[in-house]
Image (tube, rainbow, N blue to C red; front, side, top):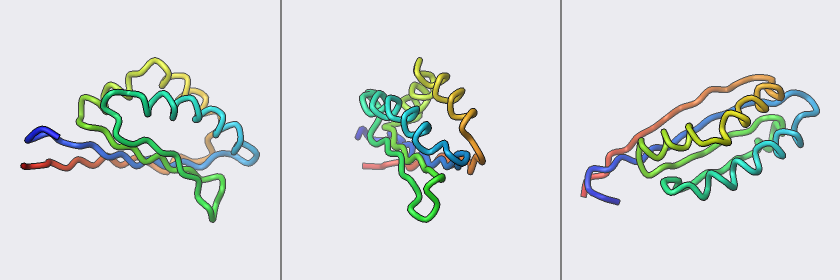
Length: 103
């Protein structure tokens, strides 16, 4: 990673409505696949809570702020957001972390 670049790590959580687990997984699957192909994406995982299967967490890592911004503006994101809202029981929030790497 170039000197002075700033990696972005994102944690986002949500809980889907009763009966919406499979629909959410189907909605998320193509977005996960597409995001992992984005040039600045380092990691993009969706984890399901083993204690509460209706709860999911996105763990994302991008090379820098530009890559994260590009991800949020991808053509497939509006449909994901719209579909997610229909399945959402509770939004658990998003946290964005940055870490400056110095060589």
